[in-house]
Every structure is written in C-alpha cells, then in structure tokens.
Length: 580
Image (cartoon, rainbow, N blue to C red; front, side):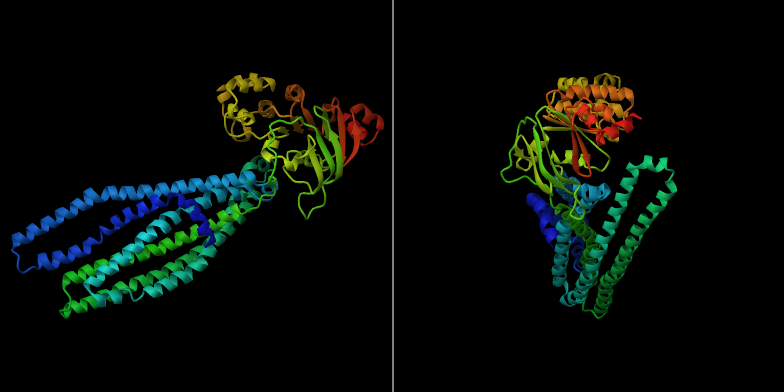
C-alpha cells in the first residue's frame, strides 16, 4: 500500500483530467446498458404487443433503431476517442515524470552504488518497471472504477426487472471476492520474483554486450552462451511458476463467474414456462448478466496486470529509496572560482566497511598552479587519491582542503565544475562531436567549441570527418581512434576551463603520434592550472614540479625527477625497469 500512496503523488497533478476521463467513461459504458432494456421493450411491447398493428409495430421499430444508430454512430465515437486519448495521455505523462525522477535519482547516487550494481538492472527499473506501472493508471484508476460502476448500474437495473433473479445472480459474488484476494496475494510475490529475475538477465546481457570484444578475443562465445542459458533458464523457471499460479487463478475465478449465469438462465427459463416472467424480461435479464459478469471477468484480467504493476511499483520505489552516500552540507558553499591549492591532512580511506584502508594517513600539499605526478605500482592508491579530490567518495578520516576549505563544505556540483578530468579510456556519448565537446560547457558558442578543439589538437581531424563537428561518434566513441577520443575529451576540458586538472593515465594507451599530439595539448592545458597526473609511463612526467611515490596507500617518496633519481629508491628502481 505504501508504494501505491507514493505512486499517487505522481498522479495527483493530473487528478482533474482523470476525473474528467472517468466521467466520459461512465457515459461511454452507460450507453450499452440501454440494449437489454431495449430488447425487453421490442420483444414484449412491440413484437408481442397485442394493441398494435403490423405497420405500427414496424414504424415503432424503425424509430427505435434510428435513435439507437444515432447514439452509436454519431455520439459514441467521439466519446470513445476522448476517453482513450485522455487515458493514454495521462498514463504517458505520469510515466514521463516518474522516469525523470528516477534519472535525477541516478545522478545523485554515488560511484560506489554503480560499482556494486549492474547497469542492466538499473535500466530495467527505469524503463521496464516504470512501463509496467502504466496499467495501474489505465486499469486501476480508470477501468476499475468504470467496471465497478457498470456492475452497480447493472445490478440496479436488474433489481427493477426481477428481485429474485437478481439475488440469485449475485449469490457467488462473495466467493468471487474471496478467491481474488486469496490468489492474488501470492501472485504479487511471484510477480516480484519474476521481475527480479528479468532484471538479473538484463544486467548479464548488458555486461556481455558491452564486453563483446573481450568475449570474441578469448573465443568464449560458447561458454558465454552456456552462462546466458543458465540465467535465462532461471528466468524461465520463475516465469513458469508465475504462469502456473496465474492459470490456476483464472481457472478457479472464471469457473465461479460462469456458474451464476448458468443458474440464472435455468431459473429464468423455469419462470417463463410457469408464466411468472415474460420472454423479453428473461432476455433482458440474461443481457444484464453479461453486463454484470463481463466486467467481473475483466477484473480478473485487471488483477493480473495490477499485480504486475504493484510489483513493479515496489521495485521502482525500492530503487528510489537507495540512500545517497554523498550529500551537501546544510551550509555548503556554492563556489564560482577557486585558485586550486590542495591539502591532504592525515587522510584514511576505504571503499567499504568490510575492506581494509586503501589510503593510510596520507598528508601532502599542492600549491596553486603546481604540476605534480602520482606514480607507483598498480593498487597502491593513486586513483583513489584523485577520486577523493572531486569528492566522488568521502574519506574515512582526516580532511581534504581546497583553497584552505574542506571539500565537504563546498556544494559538490560547484566543486566539480572547477575540476577537469581526463581518464585513460575517456567516455564519449553517442552524440555528435560538437555535443561531446559541449559537455565542457553547454552554453558555449560554436566559435568557443572550435577554439577548444584547436587547443586540444582536434580541429584538423574533426574537419576531415564526414560531417565535421556534426559527425556522430557512435556509442562510447567507437567510430574514432583512441587518440581522437582523447583529444575530444581534452577539448571539453579546455571548454570547461577548470582550475584543477586531473590526468589519470591519459596517454598510456596511445600510439606515439597520438601521444605526441595529446601531450602537446596537455602542456597547453596545464598552463596556470594545478595539475595532477597519474602515470605508469614515467618518461611522460620527468618535467613536473614534484613526484609523489604511492606504495600500499602511503606516500613513500616526494621530489622532482632529479631528486628522486639521486635517492635511488622506489622511483629510481621503477624508472630503471622502464628504461630497460
């Protein structure tokens, strides 16, 4: 019930449109309720009317049919159109609002959450589960009320025809209500289990599609097929359990809804034979039985779709309830410009409570405009250090200061706007070259985009692309070379114009020509900015102001290239190995 209440908050802004749609629906559903009464009148008063001549009967029949055709051909179609249109419109805009809310939520979740959850599972929540909730609006908020109203109207009209037959016809309604409640409580649980299994399969599929090159390179197609078959088989097992219980539900509930009409037909036939009931009344009553039990059967179908909707709602709000690991302090500063001095003071950090510290009491200072490098063996903590500066994670203890202010006292967005990051594998989105560069500053003009591209040594190759700056780059920039991707990534940092630059293995995977172009752009980018370079290739950082050697989560050596070489310590050994 909590999920329904929360979902209704998204529906609330459109409540007047929903009420209008229900009113239109009531008009639409009330029109067919005339037909059984009309049949009774035609049979008892027109066809079997003893006081009318044949021509009078024909005249009355034609008048009745003309009125009926006018209602069904002229009046009913626009009523049906607007009911369908507004119902679909409302459901679509509610889903639009909900997906926007979920996407906003994903933007606030920490990198730790994405490291522990598959992207396919998250996408399933935002796309598939949200879509499944549409039936709650169409069925639960509209058709359910309309079907309930139809049942009530039908019972009222049946009571005007024959009270005894009406009581017999509703004899099984309590049993029907009990059956629906009994069966659908378990069906909701089975639906949630099935949805979870579907999310797991989509997560597996998303990973394998993104890593298809690795699978091909190791010739593991058959192994991955077997793994997918296991995941798919698990989903099949959950689906069949859901299907079996659903079929069992339908067989029991539909049997109940079929018994009443049969009993009524038999009793009504007996009453006609005994002369206690007219043929027209019997036919009208049987017509209303159809109007009574068709909505009940639809309610069975509705219960199935609503069960899926409720299970999906639970999963959607379960995702929305994921806590933010990182939040702004109440009085956080919205900084517009920083100088770029950085200070780590006894910083300890670990990725989770179960793990040991990745960084252990690290302390150092970086001056404004200084160029420093972090080096050391893999796993030493270099990437962890640079991930803490833009506050992608929060430290366990100690403090990190930028311009002598704790990073926790800045608004995260304003802090990150002052920091430019270039990774080893820079991610480009499947937009145009121009759109990817504009990630640096969406308000930039075309001239500024071109200037940024020139500064990054990217303008020349961009102009040679089929559509120049309007060329789509493909998913993750698949249509470009590694060097071209890095230069576009650099162009958006130039456009961002940050005070602090972080280069995490920015050139390690490039060929010599691309590396030369990127290094030249990096030198221009670093002018007047605090620059932190994470490097394995030590030959690329020999000219920086200071080098920090990071080993086992600690700073073990600090100095420029010449000073560290003279010490003949860890840096010296690493450099000698690379020279060999």
